[in-house]
Each structure stands twice: as structure tokens, then as C-alpha cells.
Image 1 (cartoon, helix red, strand yellow):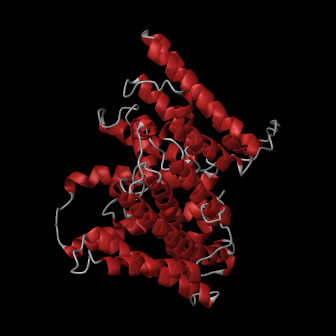
Image 2 (cartoon, rainbow, N blue to C red):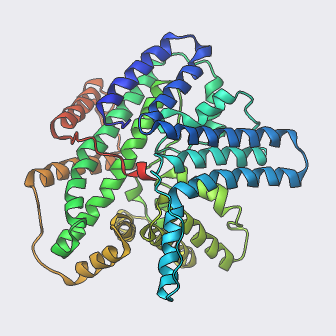
Image 3 (cartoon, rainbow, N blue to C red):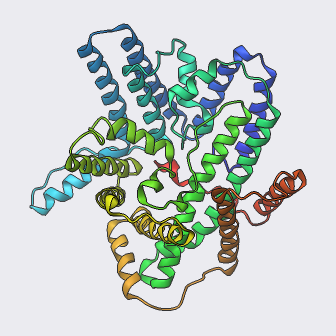
Length: 466
């Protein structure tokens, strides 16, 4: 069930009404049923997988709370990680690995046939797997106590607003909220509604408009020249930001209306002044997950510089692989890792200047580097990515506009987005800032733009495939 579908626009209000009508002690049960109904709208049989992941991590945490022996605790945690990631590997990475091995061995005239599994990738499997495994690790390190109520823990893993594309929540934040008595909060509901409206604007007005142009270019690379590929790549940077950032805003807004607080997932990433700053602003829930559960266990900053740099590269390579079973994602992750290492090496030699011009130069430079990596993320394969880079530097000509209406509407949405992000980033204080008429006019205008120039073709969110 997509957030930008009629089904969800009917589903969520009905859930809200029933949720606040029933007694507080039964609400978690209702939300659990609603969450599984939400997930089963894609492929009902795959609800078994999310239940299996829930059961494994719950059982592991239950045992971890009972056992004191360090060796036994390690075995339990490793078993939970292997079983969960084993399921993820089978559905997401097995065919990628066997295909890569086949091609590698074939290069040396060694023919090996591997068994093939024609499996549909379950929606959101990477998200809920990481969330469930994170819970096991937190219990292992005594960051929280095991949740005795299996149903509430199952709700933590399957909570529908953030189930299929995050934010990847921590048990320390979300799980205790299911045991609190929640009363309808008007101010919170208004705040959530504002986030939802802005999220829909980002998705259907900006992301889905820009995607029409981006797809027409990136699916026909040989037909396009340098200016067109540069514009398409810039558009994709904002497309993926608005697609995923829009989803996160809708998810956080829906949860807020229901009385729950999810973590912020995006913080105006294209205002980052360097690559590490970008990753403090982009997909924050995943970045912090990799930091806490991969980078720090590898040694983090507590090791030699060479080992630290290696840890950074490994973490970003794993992050790239998390995004998809394709070498383009691995290269994308590797490039981001290299940028982190280079920044870390040269950081002591930076000249610290603080003025608007130098800040602007830093922001533009960082955007160019990040946008370069998006070429590999968006390209259909590695060869296409290399072709895009070659054409950018060698193939000149006039800019391709495509459908003028698509280009203009997408550009209008992009300008509004940038103005809004500048306003939030710079923390402007305007004389009419607290004027309710101005605020309601702003959100009414966004709603009108959503209805007038939004794309309502049921376009899937990019991160659903991960």
C-alpha cells in the first residue's frame, strides 16, 4: 500500500478514528493488526518473513536477558544476526553473488552452474531486518531490557508508518512509546498534518515530476549530451531527496498524529559543507545504524589512522551493498567512503574561514561531489554510469527539455523546495512568521499545487526496492 495511493488515503483516516475510539490498552493490538494488513497488501505470503524475523530476534533477546555467560550470549547474538541476514541474503543477494561468481569464473573459462531462485524481493526487508537486529544488539549490550510483551515487540518491528522505508527506529526510542497512555493531542496532530502535506509535495510535485525527465535521459544515455546529462543528474539528486525525504515526512507525520515520535531522517542534506556533514543530514537513521553497529564495532576512531580509514571504506561499501544487489551501489558506497577518508586526511590542514562566500563554496563543492556519486546510484549498470561521465566531458550540444510542461512544473516545485530549505536552514525570523493566516495560506497553497501539478500515477517510492 503506497502512501501516494487512494487506498492509503482511505486506510490512514479510518485507522486514526478507530485508534482513538477504542480503549488505550487495546490500541497496540489494533495497530499491530493494521500494520500487518498494511504490509500484506503487497504480497500476503511475505508477512511470514517479517514474523519470522520478529520471532527470532525476540527469542534471542529473551534468552540474552536470562543468560549471564559471555560466550553463550555471543553465540545467541551471532545466531540471531546470521539467521536474519541469512534470510535477507537469500532474497536480496544470492542471485547477485552467484551471477558475479559465474561471470568471474567464466572469464577464466571455468563453467560452474549455480542453483537459481526466482524470488520476489519483499518490500522493506532491509529496513525491518536492520531494525530487528538492532534490537538484539542493544539488548546484548544492555542498552535496554528485553520486551516481555511479544505483541508490542512485533508492533515495534512492523509499525506501518515506517515499516517499508524507515526511519529505521531504535528500540530505545520507539518501543517504550507503545506502553504509554496516549491522549489525542491537537497541536501534535496539526504538526503531523503539516509534515504530511510537505511530504506529499516533495513526492508528487517535485520527485515524481523530476523523475519523468530523469528517466527519459538515463534510460537513453547514448541519445543525450553534456548539458542534458548534467541537468538530469542534478534533477536526480533532488528527485531522490524529495522521494525519500517525502516518504520520511509522511511517515513521521502519520506517527505523530497517532501520538508517536519517530526520529528525524533528513535535515536539508544539500546544505552540507563537507561529505561527513552530508551523512549527518542524509538518511540519518541508516547512517547512525551503520555507525553504531558496523563502524564502531570495527574499531571506529579508537584505532590507528590506517585502520580508521579502512573502517570507513568498509562501512560505506556495506552501506552501498545494503542499497541494492548491483555493482553500481557498491561503487557508489566506495566513492562516498573515499570522500570520507580524503576529508579526514586533509581536515587538519583546512583553513577555517567563516563567511557567507566560503560557506557557499563549500556547499556547492560538496553538492558536486555527492551528485557525482549519484550517477552510479541512478545508472542502470556500471557501463551506463561510465558512459554518462564520458558524455558529460565529451559530448556537447543543446539542452534537451522533453515535455515542456513536465520540465517547467518540476522546476517550479524545485524552486519552492529550495526556498523552503533555505528558510529552514538559515532560521530566518520574519515579522509574519507566527501569523496563522500566513501559515494556513502556505499549506493551502501546497495542497492546491499537489492537486494541480502533482503526479498521481501511483509511482513507487525509490527506497521501497531496498
